Each structure stands twice: as structure tokens, then as C-alpha cells.
Length: 287
Image 1: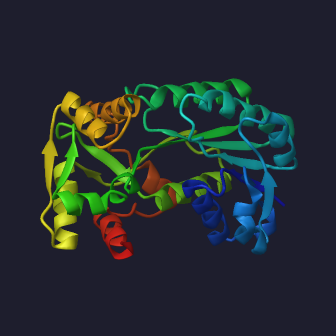
Image 2: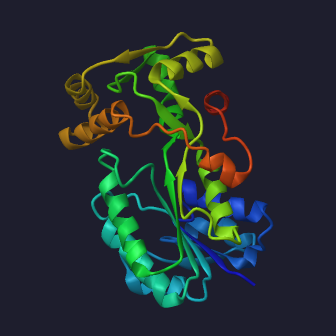
Image 3: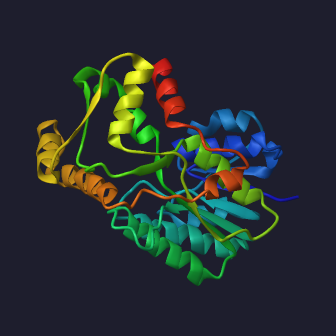
């Protein structure tokens, strides 16, 4: 019997990863959902999933949460600036628990990307390699949901605003990345070790055209300078630091950091990734 653990299991990606394991036939009692607040995982517990408290910043809680775990999915944390220390706690706890495979959700080309998100992922990858644990690095590109969550805004303003300068984005749905994580956890071989994961490639102009097609409301892409984009974000209420960070993400897209021709995602899950149109249509139906 193999025990699988998923960290951040009540988060958007972690919960989908738990679901993907169950859909692939893993017995619920062989899945450990590691969560900061167990009360938020009562629905998983009701289905037979083992729920354990574990906080990335609390090493002792992680030692308890990972006891007896054979394979672990470490979903990257959301607290930018604290993630290397937090992830190191998880990796060290995994080592102490004798975890036989650690799967980490990293960032596309984390070792070379100019994205402001890349340094912490690169550093975490280095911690994992140094640990000596058998591991798989899943370098996820962008989520469709990063954009479909703003569908209402696009429809209200009639535009997709950004500073990507026609940069190309290779993306997939959270469910796609969760399926890849489950596949990497369950695989009987070592695989490639590092996977560059993404699906369909598009520009903001393509995104605007897809929104127009799906909703029947005309939306266009409007590209501005990074400075103007940051000022606009600040005008919408973001503080200067956050606005600058978001503008830097678009600069990274303009640099090509989120574009790839890799087929690793489709190869790993055994099917094509979902399409941008399907993602927009799902968001429109849900709105």
C-alpha cells in the first residue's frame, strides 16, 4: 500500500490534485490532505481522505503530517518572499519521514526565467536537489484562470489591458496541472525528472478575440507601456509594490518567459490540455 500526501489540499490546485488522485482510483484512505485549517477539509474527510494539520511555517506540524507518507506533492506556497524557507521546512520533513518521491509545482523554466516569481522556485528546486530525495519537478506555466477570473472586467471595459507587447503565453487549466501532478505521483518510473508544463499558446489579442467569440461582446486587447500599466493599476487601488509586481509579470511575458512548445503536459497526462476557448466558455457559463 502506498500513501500519497498533498499539501495545501484545500487550495485551488491542491484540492484538484486530491480529486485527480481519487479519480485515478486511489483509495481515499491512502490519500493524506495536508492543510493549515482542517475544518476547511471536512468534505474530504467525509469521503474517507485522511486530513492532517500542517503549516509550511511550522516544521513540527509538518513532521506529524507527513509521518508514514510514501509520495508527496508539494504545492508551492502563496506567500511570496517566504516560500523558500517554507518549502525547505516541507522538504526537510519529507526527508525525515522517508518520503520516496517528492513532486514539486515549480514555474516554467524556473532556472532561466526573468519572472519575478522565478527566484523562489529556482531556490526551492535547489533545496530539493540537495536533499537527495527522489523527486519530480513540474514547472507549471500560467493558468487560464489567471485571465478568466477577470472575464467580468473585460466585458465591462471592452478591453484586455496589459503590457505584454504581443508576448505569447502558453497556459493550461488548474485541472490540467492537477492531473499532471497526480500522474507524476502515481508513475512507476522516474520519468524525465523535470517537466515543462503548458498547453495552448496565445497572445492578449487572441484572448480578446476568444472572449468576443464566446460571449458575443466585443473585447479588444490594448497594450500599453509598463509604466502606464503600473500607473493604471495604482489608479484602480493597488499599492505601488503590488502594481509594480503585476507589471513585471507582463514584462516577463513580453520577454517570452511563459511561452513553450513543450508537449510534456499532454505526454504526462495522456491527453491534450484543455483549450483557451473551453476555459473562457466555462467561466462565462459560471458567471
